[in-house]
Image (cartoon, rainbow, N blue to C red):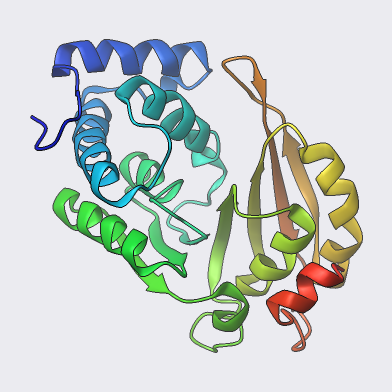
Length: 246
């Protein structure tokens, strides 16, 4: 099935591999024939694109299932029904593409400042007929554009930067009453403590926190509910955000 030097297991083998990891990581609800076919096609398209563009250090099907699909699917049920979702710093398409497969009701906008990565995401979404559009921009600039500011029911971010920086980049895009979903690794607890004050300044507050374990690796997911509008001065320029996080 591959066009490049990429080894993709045959579908029956892939399907069992996917099922194994979804079940082992508490994600069995997302296992069905339609999703399995979707993830198989995504794996082929993504790994072949990765061979050309260098989107991820993960270059095998099983690693992609575990470290990209399973990790991203932890937030799939946290997105409101029929929501508009902005995925900030989507990179090679995560969590955009896995969410688009299992949540066909969600309209996703994938934001990244690297055009070649967004081209891959757009091409894959188009070939798979997923409900995804792309936006090539810097978050701190797009958040001041009235077309995007406080226009999304949910905003997600995964492996972009530390949480005290992410909050200022992401919360301005969230509608009042909407949520910012921050996906963090093992250092998530310490990051949240540093970000908590800024979350309040930006109009948000912690709603829920979950701590799933992915193949024994601790993850942290913070759901920040937006209770009031973000002051017009935020986000500041990226250099200022990094130098002096809220």
